[in-house]
Amino acid sequence: MAFKLEKVIPWGRSLKEYVGMFALTTDNFKVKILDCAGGPASFNTEMTRQGYQVISCDPIYQFRANEIAQRIQETYQTVVDGVKANRENYNWQNAQSPEQLGQIRMLAMQQFLEDLPLGIQQERYINGELPVLPFQNSQFELALCSHFLFTYSDLLSQKFHLASILELCRVADEVRIFPLLNISGEPSLLLPWVMSELEAQNYRVEIKQVPYEFQKGGNQMLRVWKD
Ligand SMILES: C[S@@+](CC[C@H](N)C(=O)[O-])C[C@H]1O[C@@H](n2cnc3c(N)ncnc32)[C@H](O)[C@@H]1O
Image (tube, rainbow, N blue to C red; front, side, top):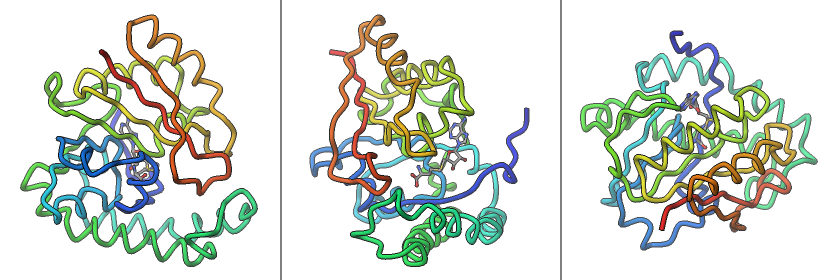
């Protein structure tokens, strides 16, 4: 089935947020990184500017910057209003209000939109969709996946989650997924089954606390790797 932009609510995070969400160190910066479900995050843009190597993958990269920009305009207020209606579920140390959060995210998304045409030419933004990725085995040392797997636990099956994580493990030596909460801010019920299936297939799994917590209780990532 064709991927529809009308189904996506684009919302992109910055390099600073990725560093917190995935507890990234300066050593991590130096390896080949895949940002899967990267969407309109500015992680790729900001890392590239600093001379690091990031490839982002998302089905929205089949669309042009102006089409994605229009979709951002259409959905922006709905997202800010949604956060406003549930503001007690979030921590407000960094962004002080839903409006300020919106401005921070918009800045990240604008950087992404400006970078997209060049990034497509340079093959830094690749149109691709889990659970099958257009990359070679072990092409990356680190794969990151923010706010897609486990976030949409109510929409995407446990089989989809397992197949997607195995695919990320095929293309990268280590996989990090954040957060481990669903969209309502509750711990994903899929996590225990997915972790035990990965262990049964000889993967190492670890839940690690990270220094980022915007959704209350959302301060853990899943690490998966093979010795
Ligand atoms: C909430 S956004 C997260 C963007 C970014 N990672 C961040 O944290 O700022 C989720 C992204 O998942 C992408 N997506 C949807 N289905 C996907 C799939 N099957 N495989 C990979 N990405 C997908 C959407 O296009 C969207 O850009």
